[in-house]
Length: 416
Image 1 (cartoon, helix red, strand yellow):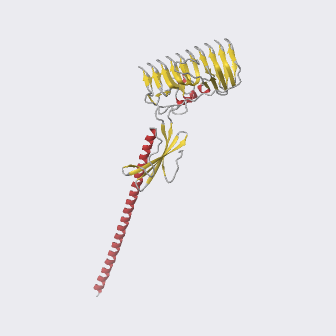
Image 2: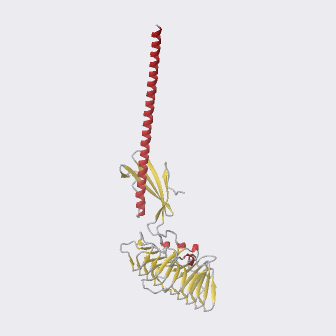
Image 3: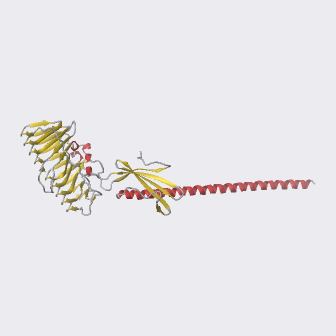
């Protein structure tokens, strides 16, 4: 009897153990299936997010290429997206002002969406970024040289290395550019956007940054001449000097005879209604210590050989000559605008309706903009980079300023 009782007890214990083991195995199996399923779900969700992210990036690349090639950066839309390998994307471009544009790309795999934003800035070369610009023509004769310097960093001489200073002496035109043999352009040359616009290049020419067509025409601002009470004619005889300014001044004509010296103090707006003549070996000095000086010339201006027009600090940003005269053609000589040999000039020359010739051995520190521009042999133009407001390099000009992945509903904005 005792043996039978013990056997029954042992049998019941084994059964209980088997049940416990079965329950544990079932629980572990269920746990394993749950974890496995969750991993699969998470992996699937991760793959969907990754696929949608790749789709958004693809859309951003398409928009970037569009922007670089003159488009506005918009690509498809949410209702009619573009497709790529079973994925979808669309891009919305927003103008943020000041040359900035936001590209917000959305990518989708049909289940998940991802959004990324790129902010780009247009640094295409504008009218202020050329040392020389001729709206209808730029002619550069043999052995002429164009380079650049930055007046904010000191004098031109302090920035010269070898036979030139910096390499941003850019040349531009809305039409043709002609560069004769042995001329040097330490910068790039950009001719007009029309299919008929060209650049002709002679032998042994140096154009360090290459050349190419513009995307669009540049516009030369018109000259609006103010009117003040006239002080008549002013003549400075040889061996004597005269100081005028500051303030708003107007003269019919100004003449400095040989060895005469005229000083104009700024801030000053000086209007010359008939003629300005700087005779050989005479000088006009512009003292811009207290403010900039703008000279308006309505008719003739003659800067003769061995004369000098300069500023007290040799800063081209402080002196601007604006010419309102009109020439009917490239070879027109009335009104007379002459920058003759062996002279130097620190400042900017703006003559939107005139043909301006820079004579042999003339040296200009600043910039020159006119309807037609001719540089004679051995003339030198040193573009002051401090006058530029945009890009100084060639190319379409868009550069990436920021990138980020967007979460939730966010509007396009500049990124800090």
